[in-house]
Length: 502
Ligand code: MFK
Ligand code: FAD
Image 1 (cartoon, protein in one colour):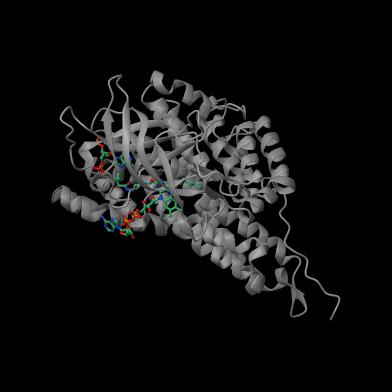
Image 2: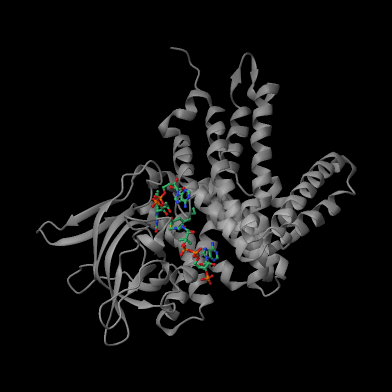
């Protein structure tokens, strides 16, 4: 037995190590406070929090149905590390930053940059944070109704003891994509204007949340409901326990056994008289939860690129430690080419995602032009579906760059691939989001596509002064003109053709 043991890859400060992120912020948000916050947070992630993330994976949540005396309790027991993530998230303002708006239109870029370095170390705490942010956005966008004003304060709080997380319960057995036909949950009106929900939610992630936004069909005075999407309304429900410690109106049926995201509980819930309040007008549930979908889809994209960046960082570090055929991996041109390809994919995806965050920040600061608003609507599903797929490909390639060790469970590397696989499924599958793009093009009579063409042309005009970019500018410009011409011909034939063309 020889004395050789391979050095393991080391996670260094993910902010300081990320030249593109630093460069992007230096150009757009050159604030000392932001740089020092991200540097300090990055240091803590590398030195401390990353091991908590691993702990969440090693000690996954479990469901305790009964207490020792046989009483039903439905406790979801989570690891200490998962609980520490909640406190950390509050203290670091991972949701709050987006609402404090200390940096005006750039506040979302700041918030998402912080989440971007946090996500791969978060033990999937990024998931409840996404839904919490989405719920806060919905509540804010419908004007902080009194019934959830307190909740809004908690969702956006920096105080750990006040901070709440939210769930997003949409999917039922018959429909996750098609919630309009698939939702069976009914909302029975109560005399005080509130409702009680009865139904079965088939996927509910981070089920240890304090509240949730959910969809249900409100019954009329005769107990009838309206079928389809037009019968759905948006409801707010708190998750609480009664004096006997029982969940009010909820039974946790079981926790899902999942390919990845094992750090986080995903439960099937029987809603059996869950007290709730209607937030939307009757029948406007899908349109009202759309704000949540926009936010969670952006978080999804941030997490996708964050996973790619993390695997590239680790692979790069490993290339300076692993010797094969007489020299370090970093000195093998073919290996460097592999790393360079991953780096290029990651950089492109990062810039796309940050563009989305920039647009969101402009919209929320009242600065968005019509063109910005169209672009945000178009790019949200496109970036989510594209980065979801890309993350699987890049992270899979990343695992291979560690050789056999990339396949070994307790290196923590395989979990990255497992967790990436969900990114193209939840929050809208690739096909469903593709159809969302077609619908938004058709509904805007092609205006979102026009916004896209205008935007890319202005980017090309900016790039044309850089001589090294001339071939790329020409190639993209040519493809764009062809596409534009095609869409114009299609549009002249009517809205259905436009939908097909897009
Ligand atoms: C690490 C980060 C992790 C992130 C958190 C993950 C944890 C949560 C995991 C989950 O998966 S939560 C569940 C997510 N579920 C989905 O994403 C559902 C996917 N299905 C769709 O998106 C369907 O397209 C949809 C349910 C919206 C189809 O329903 P409908 O009723 O057929 O929609 P329709 O008729 O197209 O639109 C109804 C209204 O909503 C319209 O408004 P108007 O009535 O005012 O015209 C639409 O404009 C609006 N709408 C729909 N999608 C929209 C939208 N508005 C803005 N953006 C959108 N994307
Ligand atoms: P289906 O809609 O049955 O889709 C099956 C296939 O059909 C897919 O490939 C899809 O792309 C395709 N398809 C569907 N419609 C069309 C169409 N019109 N044209 C072409 N192809 C189509 N949901 C929640 O509400 N809350 C949660 O917290 C939550 N957490 C989750 C956690 C995990 C780990 C997972 C895996 C899922 C979670 N989900 C959650 C559910 C998730 O959002 C749904 O699974 C997803 O939206 C897909 O819905 P579905 O499972 O009903 O698939």
